[in-house]
Amino acid sequence: MSFTLNPTLAGSNIYEVNIRQYTRDGTLKAFEMHLPRLRSMGIEILWFMPLTPISEKERKGSLGSYYAAADFFSINPEFGTTDDFKHLVEQAHHHGFKVIIDWVANHTGWDHTWTHTNPEFYRQNEAGQFYERNGWEDVIDLNYDSGSMRIAMINAMRYWVDQFNIDGFRCDMAMLVPLDFWMEARGTLDQLKALIWLAECEDPAYLSVFDLMYGWEWMHLTAAVARGEQHKSQLLQLLDKYHSHTASGQKICFFTSNHDENSWNGTEFERYGQAALLFAALNMILPNGIPLIYSGQELPVTHRLQFFDKDEIPWGSQDPALDTFYTLLLNLRKSNQNIKHPVAPATFNHLVADDRIFSIQLGKPGVNDIIGIFNLSNQETEFLMDGARLSGKYRNVLTQQTFNAQKEHRVHLTPFDFRVYENTETGISVS
Image 1: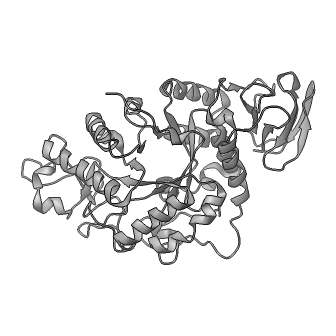
Image 2: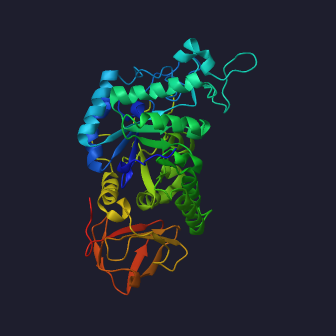
Image 3: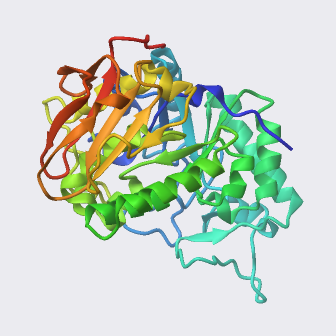
């Protein structure tokens, strides 16, 4: 079975919403006030972490994990009501967002309604006890050998499309669920509307069903580059691999943080150090990619948010310090045809003859091309950029400064500094 990739992903982006930590109230209603700001920042797709009630049995911390569902057909009362979410989706659509929700299909919490009504929906050991295979103590595995469970799961997903008019699913640990289930689910649910399908997964086989999958390997590799443990040649090798996986138009989701990384492994500043913004910017212009921004990265949040307990993001009264950074780069993604619908392949590392510098050029010179130049080292450097590969006038996207392409152009970069330029003299941005 083949699927039509969702066309709204071209030039798009995803923002992960952690409702519990987003506001003091931690509710859907309280989050609504941020919709205009996020839209102004250039956000296109809102991904809400699981909104379902959380199991009491084996609960971790005071509030438990979003990913230990107690029921697939209601809203966690911690966040509000079904009417609250309906209103939020309506308002999000009014502002121009797409809304996707986290869907946890591999497991549920220990006291999910199905444990009472349909225990055969679960894997059970020889003693007839529920269990989980990966060491997650607060959840139990579902049984995909059960055709009845598969039907019930698809019906649960249908409920959220029918009742709330959501636009898609971010599928948690998608590779733990059989691929043929996802084929069945998408084949059924896409008949309701064209949905967005994001897989938390790195198995390229799943791109036969999903529009995009996670770039975990890219995140780990770039963090290693920031530590000086890997080099730009490894980046190119991985980008080549991703290119082969996305030959039919699928996308890779690139990020420097998400709920797992922030809570368990550290903020982007802990893991990337001075290179945090460099790789956030690079992720914005990578071919075949969709950037993911986690709640509060625009502030930025500089501490690990608690996962099982309340830990409010400290927005304060000032505009987020990185709002302009993200706004300018996200708007570049939306406006530039070489990101949205490229007609020429990206070229790498042909602008600068320096092993410390990673460069990328999207599009043909002089045809609204984008240039990115990234100092991957902790050393200050100055170099000549090959002007023979440039044409016309270029604008620094973040500072608005311009330069005219010449035979050679001198650039000075501090440690982990970078430049993103867009050609403005010739070619036209297409929105």
